[in-house]
Image (cartoon, rainbow, N blue to C red; front, side):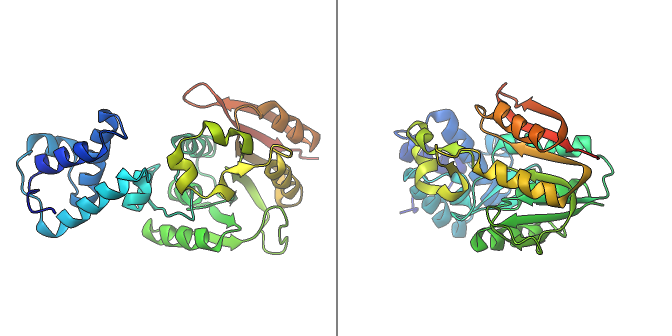
Length: 289
């Protein structure tokens, strides 16, 4: 099948032909650049300047497989089995969510507000480990733990920690029914828990609904703050006095989550906008009394 495909130009044209009925051309171009970088280590400029470069024979079959998978609507991060998150290479599969740019903003906020931090951090609902790993990478003196209910996700997270050469501990626990003895006392709690309402499914793209783990995405309309309540309840026992909490949120639920924090004795509680101007994060500090 790949006999007639030899050069960068050939493969770019093949990808456009296969995907043009599914994706806009600018997105296909982005796919092409990402595939060439992942498979061949080529940057965008190298691709642009060398359209007639002959690709290695042993990689052509993989390129064709990638094109076929993309044609099904499968997200490119799952197709390539990895993505870049805050400068870290993060492996992903269908047991883990694809890390989002908004979550990079959360990590950036924590790093900027906690330079030279030497305490303990727990990332609740760690998934691929992207938050915990990137925090450890940039706050090297911190002790970081990731917690998740999914053993399959934790296996991915552990391999990602090794891949990025960081020492992060991972714990299997259900935040809704936490094993208190397993979970360390900490100075910072961070979480990007499930927060998409079941009723919002109808507005979501099929590539999210068909491929990403629903247990990591959705909450019932009848109790949309179930995970935030559990996290705040855990913080009452495991977060140090004066400790900080950082949460990624559903943009429509910011004020409700602020009220939960205020009722639990947190202060300096704030809603923070993401790069698109949406209510996306809440932070606060635990009462020191």
